[in-house]
Length: 377
Image 1 (cartoon, helix red, strand yellow):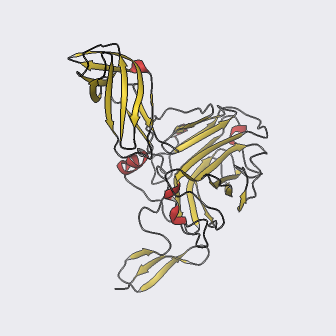
Image 2: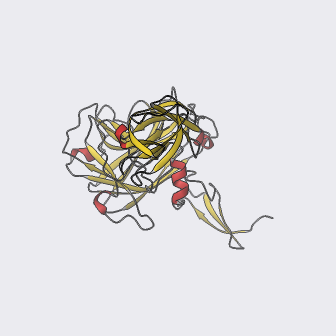
Image 3: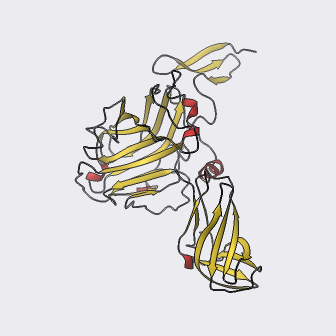
């Protein structure tokens, strides 16, 4: 049965965006009610790698799903709730960037913050076809600097060169401001459609002339990461730039931020990165068997299934112990035996020798122990 539409809310182009029926029902005309935000951890709540400041010497993931690049390196820090300011109403966390010096940018320098999409997560855009849809990016931002800033969306799939540079203005220093930008769909280039690179959303924090010369608010080809006239956070010592409530959705209207539960956001982040440890000394992680007298093979089921077979790293080999028959001793090496998106097999070399076939258990040798499985883009 159809609903009589008695009222609508329109976007800036005059198109119906939200309809209100005579029975009080609400319908989104241009996008769905739920799962419309394609950004994972847009509220900056999940920080599996830690809440201490990250200083990218080159490039690193920081808060979950947010990737920082600094060239020539170490020109800013990234931290959850840096500066301890009050977030916008409705949010408890934000990602904070702080400049570490008054750096004079060279032509080829760039300092950026990325969100990287799998190609299959943006297929609904229909980009590269005549049916290409507009998308809208919205977010809360707060900076100690006022004036023009920019971000780009660009095609990171193999062979992709298209990018759209969008500008926004910070009007008042050290004040949370809400920004929305609508980007017209690209009809000309093939975009990713699998679990590899698709689109990248990239915020400019300070870029030299080589990469900072994009034409504002237009589609183009090239390697630009920002537009001329952008502020540079890294060029003012102690300058700050904070962001939260990042949403990217199909359509030409910005809908209210889609709050998802912490548990759901964490599970989505764990598709890309999972870690064990950090909760308590002697935390038990998993069990396996002695493959040789000094090497134990451990099986780690991956829940949820990861994007691809992950790589393995540990905080330090000595951060972990092996226990068997009521005795434990330190480990000297951890390597990945094999892995798929669903399970990882880890070989652990230990100073605690035993008989091949005996059971062994991995446990943390302190609160700083971390076992990391990474399937990030």
